[in-house]
Image (cartoon, rainbow, N blue to C red; front, side, top):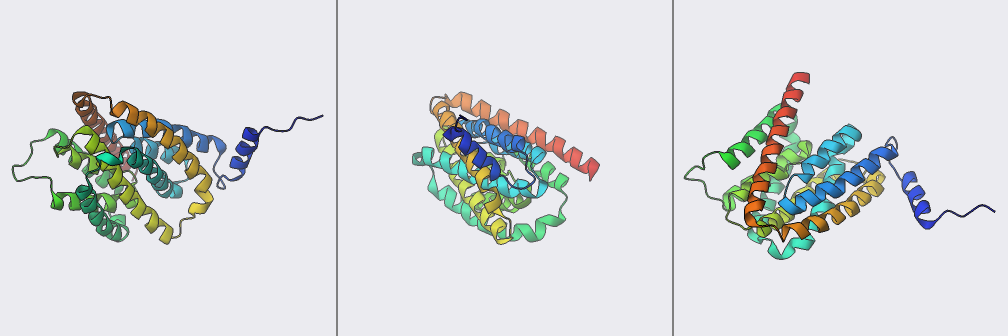
Length: 267
């Protein structure tokens, strides 16, 4: 007498049937597993995971789906991070960032498409390196204007570039916030930015429903990673956090410069 499939096997088979057309199972599982580790990285240091996940998705997902699916996954991941770290959010920064994001998203689709991707990547890399390692202008003070501008620029670029969390993280590094407030505020700001992006892509007609199962699995995996990363964040000394924060930002800038070189060469 044949054995009945277990519930877990049945759910797995159901998941396979819900995959978007043309997406192999190995690609979906690769993104789901990657989401766990990248979310843990972001929860611990406030950045890095989104760009790493984007790099993986760019290699294994259809090109047209990368940015919108990544945005939906990041919305879920950052929402989980925000929930776990919500008591440390600095809300005035988030509100100014969101206001700028609304303006940036409105302009992004109209103006950004005419700019070469390699130039944008190189520009973001230069901004990160200068802000982290360069001399601070005497007139520079983090405040409403700079947070508004950061939100606008980040939302403008994220419409086609995808992972622009390092821009907000770099600006937050110029504040005097402690590590908990910095990471939590970044999470809330990213929820706003990715939420705006999802609304815009939905209005443009992207079929999020076809990708719902994959996005949901990535979000669940990412939340598990967020729990682990938050555990280490709350036990990490400030000095270790600051060194790790700068190190990850620098790696991101180097990656963007290399990617810009490839884009320029093949463009």
